[in-house]
Image (cartoon, rainbow, N blue to C red):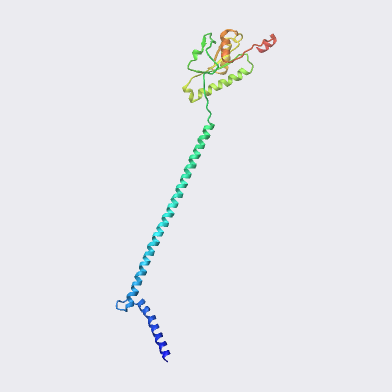
Length: 241
């Protein structure tokens, strides 16, 4: 019996010990048992820990945002730099290609053609290179009895003169077209004048007195013109006329 009574007392004490913390936990009044104060202290501790956790979370969030923003900004800067480098590289390649395609012409000395000369116009008046000083001129060597090559060439020359004079650039220079007969023995002044006007009204006809004139041979040599006379039979000459 003594043993049973002892067990009963132990059970009652255990129930009281179990109920006390409950009352201390749920009680919030100042007049409660001593356990009330202990429970309030625990709540303040929990609130303080929660605020500290919130602050740590906020700090971590801000740091994460900073890292993400810094990373995005770095990537954007790298992409922009890459685009600039690619654009600059493309520009350099284009300039290099232009330099390769660009041809360079170097002029040294004077062209070994032309020079001083003296001939006569269809009126028998002397004409020299000095009379054309400050002008450009196209010069063609031929003869009025030429059956095909001379007429075709003179038509091309006349068309070129018209095209040049119709251009805006003609305001800045002057151009003359000249026909030189290499056969004055047969080409009279009257025949030359009539011949040149067939092709262009501004075409100037020049020649010399004879085929063997030193002045005529001189201009032919200076302009790299080779002339040879073919002697025809009377029948061929009559057909040529």
